[in-house]
Length: 242
Image (tube, rainbow, N blue to C red; front, side, top):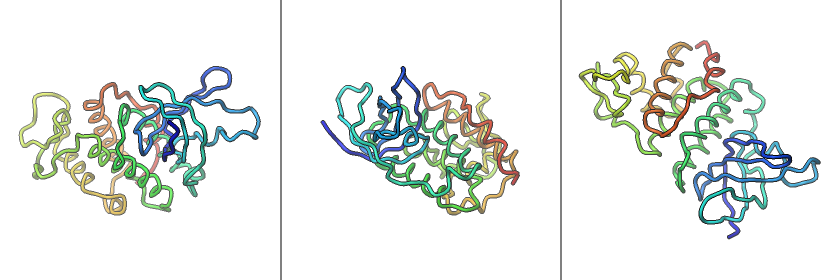
């Protein structure tokens, strides 16, 4: 069945001599993998630059039930970026977010709210000129709401630990090692309550930001099957002194 939908590129990989496999998050079908042939000249509709991480597309394809690689019929850029490709810090964040989403949304079916959240977050980052150092932290924590393991913030009290395994704030430290101590658990609680617009009110230095990122990624590894260590986090750790 020929269908159209909005899509966000997460990853592309060369396949054989002239084909590329592209993983996308789509508005109407969740995660979909496509195989396409990229022409060696610039005359064809499908161009390599359309499949850069987080590129927003309008696509047309033959939707075939049963999964497997789908085949693209038409691709158009729907929301050209104004700053992400030209700002080294934003580019580093976008590469990290794309890798994060590749694993965090793996297996996701149609979820319009999830897609809208990701789309709005990326567009917010593209339009922001400053105060986006905490973007990836807020983005990751709030995404957990859409995939089913957002913590209950009503359970938090001053001095609580955060139990990463059970996704709860607890007064008594659990016996296992997957726990965030009270000082940093308070930061996580604050981040969960923030929006992109208000996160600039939360000041952290680079070391503190990296610590929180490690906790959040551990949280995802505990709750998302086969969630790996992310390669792009190492570059992100070097950004933003304050």
